Amino acid sequence: MGQPSSAQTKIFRVLISSAILGAVGIGVFLLLLKSWTTMKTDTQSRAEIEIARILADMEDSRPYLVGTKEGEVAPNRQLESDIAAPVDSLCLVVWNPKRERWVRTNFPYWFVRMKMRHGLSVTLLHAAAKEDWSHLLIDTSIDDLERRGPGLILHVKRPDGREILVWNESFAGNLKKSK
Image (cartoon, rainbow, N blue to C red; front, top):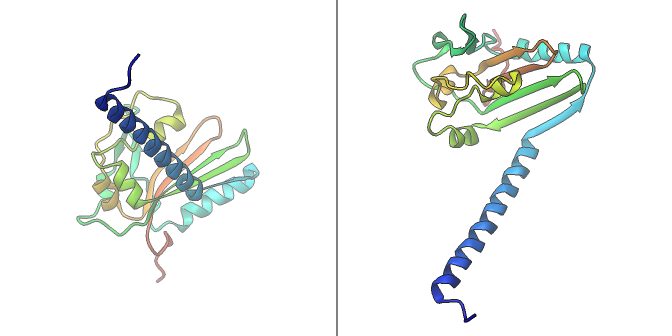
């Protein structure tokens, strides 16, 4: 075998560079995800209290994504404003009673905007929680979620006890406005 050609060497360098950049990108994403996520162990009664507190603290606890009679999920367009409201993060809480564990993730909206550039299905979280992949497509975009403003996006209670909350949180927190 002879020496590799100049073109082969360039291709090899591009492949190695791409692999290194990909590994760095995955590492950065995992570090960010870890910083956005908290987990804790708890009891069922404390979980119920915490979920009730989260819902009570919301400016608007009417869910944006609701189930239809056909068993699909659709956005409640009546909860949208004409202009986008300032939101800071898309929050997700999952309670798993079998493991007695909470998982809470706060995705900054810059990340949500980046991931939903082309109207990614927000029901992916709902489908994963229900383990039902048949209803993934929904006509909801990042603009729709921002017009929803602070408040509940999705609340699912599974028969096995798992509970999932997804909501928009505003810059000032998602607390009710004081009178």
